[in-house]
Image 1: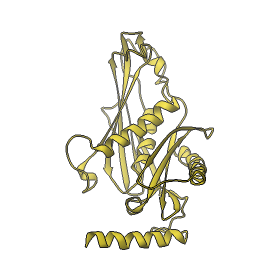
Image 2: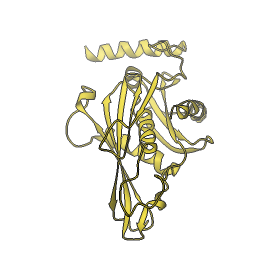
Image 3: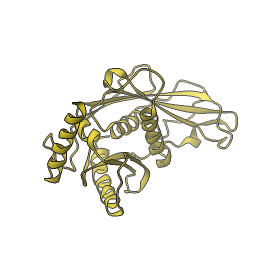
Length: 253
């Protein structure tokens, strides 16, 4: 019965998409309402809560001293973790991070790292011996689709909220961040592409493509998901959606 309901729902959503419509009335290139609140965790150096429709993601940032990696002795460390809390969705289970949590953390990490949003070389205390490590912890509070875009937004907002630690080793006037990378995830349902998929759209989509961009439109990260594919023309269309919607998301930060 569950499979029959899922099949009927998919046919309904696919039929709507073929008409350029969505189940909640949005346009195919339209995001749900976005709210960003900073400074929501008192014990973190920086934090933010993002509400994307009914999806909610909270991010906390902590700075701690640590040893640099051997291949980057003069650069700080970035570590991104994601927790899919069971209270956020009946499909999330307690325990070690599953492949979905690992993928979410990797996409956010790649977006921040490859955009060079954090000037990691400025976080070196003593080359080869001690650096500042930046821990970005993502907590999904409510899952109603499009966790990647919401998590990138929350992470970037939290990094801009960071207050440097009280320490003699901290010599910078502020936390060294620059630029505002954002991620736009495009899903394809029955050949029709749309952004910011709700949970039902996401669960019935053939494939998804996340494209992270910088202010100048350059791509800093990409991630393909789902069993379906995108043609070259569809990838180019997805990029145009990412570039256009990215400008809208960046204005929220």
